[in-house]
Image 1 (tube, helix red, strand yellow):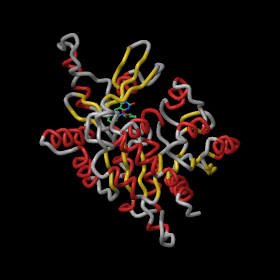
Image 2 (tube, protein in one colour; image 1 turned 135 degrees about the horizontal axis):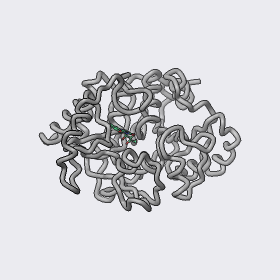
Image 3 (cartoon, rainbow, N blue to C red; image 1 turned 45 degrees about the vertical axis):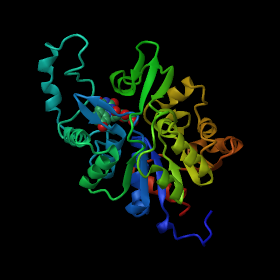
Image 4 (spheres, rainbow, N blue to C red; image 1 turned 120 degrees about the vertical axis):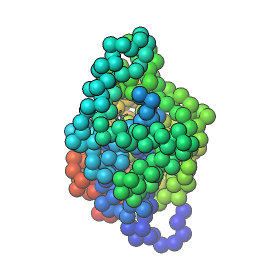
Length: 328
Ligand code: FO1
């Protein structure tokens, strides 16, 4: 509880729980209204995977590339102006690949320039660096001044159970099968043993405001909150936690959050998301299109803020962030 008079808005520090695209856009908006040094992103790494022996951290890379202005804006992942020669050259080896081998798989799109990031991360991890340290190096290399923290340095991975393919790693569900198949359930393997990444709990405990980005509540924010010490820290800050609904007018802007919420028995609306977050957030930002749900959000025990949440431009993202920070 602050005992001094409120600090000027530009002095406020924020910790943001992040998935990929939606979180990256929100962070871009925050970077326009707060000094970078006041912003800590705590990022889901349960989507991480190893492909061709390379360590890939999709949500971290989406955030870094977006904030650096280097993301491919159509795809929402990978680099703009990318070429795909290395991936194409793998075709030669497909014919000699023995059954059961995943060598030369081409369903996961790794662009030629993007490979450099994965080469760097993989080698640094092999040298014994933590993912926290490597992520800081990558952020610095891209000229970013905010703090980007992986939620954990331990192995914590999302698995999706499907009727067609059984229990499969998240990227097989999301990319290989284009999240077009029904997810019966999700599990976070390693969550019980995982510890929060360096500085994560401290960031949540000391931030003036904690924001839950408009990311998939189940497979982006879910893994972050599956780490006991992180969940406890966020619950302890509930009064200062603002969640931004990723569901607008009953739909996710991107990705499978709407279908996954429905399969999990959660109402596919800002009110359903409010119910899901009731123990961790006291405020929920919902879109103008969902204004009529404000009372349903309030009935779940969250203070509703109704505003434009569609971040199709940096200006719109910054306006949303000003509203979240109470700067308007
Ligand atoms: N998403 C896709 O839909 N297809 C891809 O081929 C793909 C490749 C890829 C490579 C590197 C990277 O950092 C991300 C990549 N993504 C791809 C995005 C990513 O896998 C998902 O959007 C997230 O895991 C969901 O948050």
